[in-house]
Image (cartoon, rainbow, N blue to C red):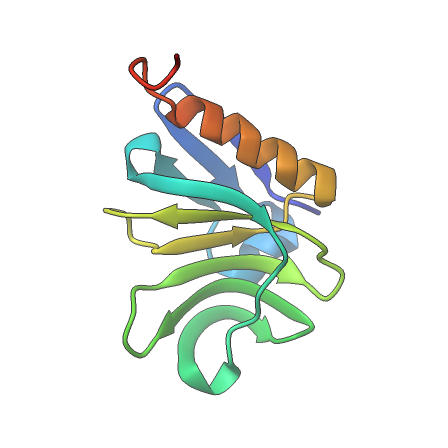
Amino acid sequence: MPPVVELRDDHVLIRLEGGDALAALRRQIVVPYSTIMSVEAARPEWPALWTTVGLGLRAPPLVLKGTTRPWSKRQAFWFQDKGTKRVGRFHLDGHAFATIHLDVGGRDAADELAEAIAARLVGPDDAA
């Protein structure tokens, strides 16, 4: 089941439920809009198993739900499995995660999420 993504006034709330929350070792992630540098719909990536440490369910390229931390970089959050065709990828600054890779339920859903968040990131000076 894809995570529930809610676009609130000042942040994005990502909620994981049931077995997915257990697999990822967390129930929710709060991402303030001020920390989002960009968001895109993209093909899923898989980190090399031997280059990261992490918590959660990790068996690339079958499933990756949880956090990873490459030896020289900030940690990332992953929610994808073998059938994932497209993810919403958040690039963050000033947040616990450098990136979030999120399977939101399909190609169209990832595109719609990226567009909706990008629209909220446009400030009043950028809107013209």
